[in-house]
Length: 210
Ligand SMILES: Cc1cc2nc3c(=O)[nH]c(=O)nc-3n(C[C@H](O)[C@H](O)[C@H](O)COP(=O)(O)O)c2cc1C
Image 1 (tube, helix red, strand yellow):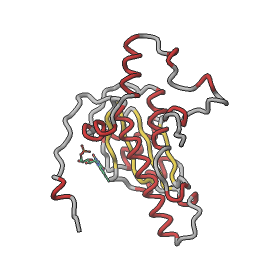
Image 2 (cartoon, helix red, strand yellow; image 1 turned 30 degrees about the vertical axis):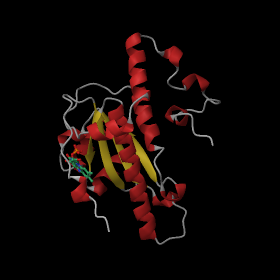
Image 3 (cartoon, rainbow, N blue to C red; image 1 turned 180 degrees about the vertical axis):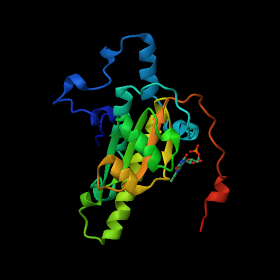
Image 4 (cartoon, protein in one colour; image 1 turned 45 degrees about the vertical axis):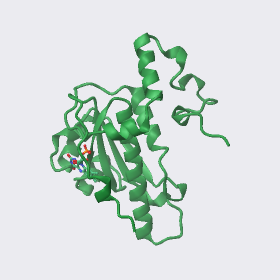
């Protein structure tokens, strides 16, 4: 049985852009960077899940391109209905659009974050013979799962994030210039202070064994 080599191979094809494949060991210029590289590739997914905590205060520091690429590549690994990938990601770099998104998100100021990703539903991609409401639900689930994968990937990379669901869909669509309905805005950046994870319900309360 063969598996994809790693997540990096989803970002660039080795054949078409060998020079762009990240990370290459030979690119690692300092011991510190090499240490960080090792941390990333050895991250335990359970620790990432356990330690993730929503964050609304970000440092005024840009997220490195290589981390952004890994966060986007993680979204591309999520399961989707029928494998049709019924979602699109808008990577918002424009500061004017970020300001419009704050407005579209009930004036939540932290939406103006260093890294802003809007996950939209694209039910038109889901080529399955089901009623439109089912296809819409599938595309919502596709977009949501992709965003969740990105959120976890971001935490594995030492970033924090806030999931924004309180949005005016029409205003977000207008800001993005799209007719695709947004599922969520994921706002990310380096945390001003790494917060402790929030306590959750106990499993005994959560799980209903029947
Ligand atoms: C569907 C959904 C919608 C959310 N919408 C918002 C939002 O609009 N604004 C916000 O500040 N946080 C929002 N959050 C973040 C939650 O408040 C946060 O996940 C929750 O308090 C649990 O904290 P934790 O993520 O640290 O476990 C949303 C989370 C989810 C899953």
